[in-house]
Image 1 (cartoon, rainbow, N blue to C red):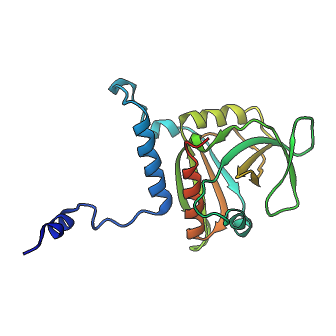
Image 2 (cartoon, helix red, strand yellow; image 1 turned 90 degrees about the vertical axis):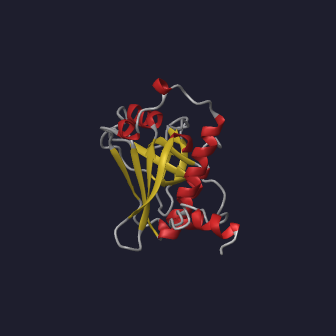
Image 3 (cartoon, rainbow, N blue to C red; image 1 turned 135 degrees about the vertical axis):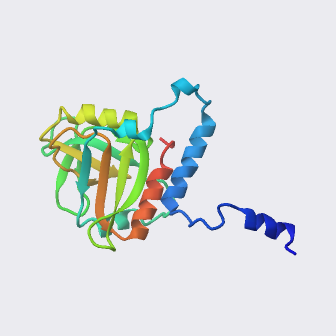
Length: 210
């Protein structure tokens, strides 16, 4: 006859569930902590569904095709520390008040505005996605309602100019804005799945720390 420990173990409904990737576990942990810090809202004040938040929003694709090795070397020193995610407007030529910054993995320089458009706290979801071949992966970032609104309002007046994406202060890409950007961004750097999962988990870990 099974003892009490074995009976409880066998009754666990999650026993046979596959283990979640690190970045998904971290995202759930952040969600639980955030929920514990705020009072429950009345039913009529609860946020709308995620589908409503991201409806009719544009997709921003940040192509960094040759940056996987470069980016991984930048963030490999501490595999567990949070990564600071930022998006800023940028210019291709210097101007008063702008900060000169090199684009990782290239000889290119851009000139950053001081204002941060969105950061870790504007993120609703982080996922690892396939990027080309079976061993190449990228990081998909979906912004929350406030983050998507800030992106859309800012980028619609900056068409034809640059948008810089920074990780821990390093510019990883600075694409030209072709149309207003809203809900999503994809950082594609030809990462391995393990590299993408670690970077994604560390971006998630930065939520609530800024």
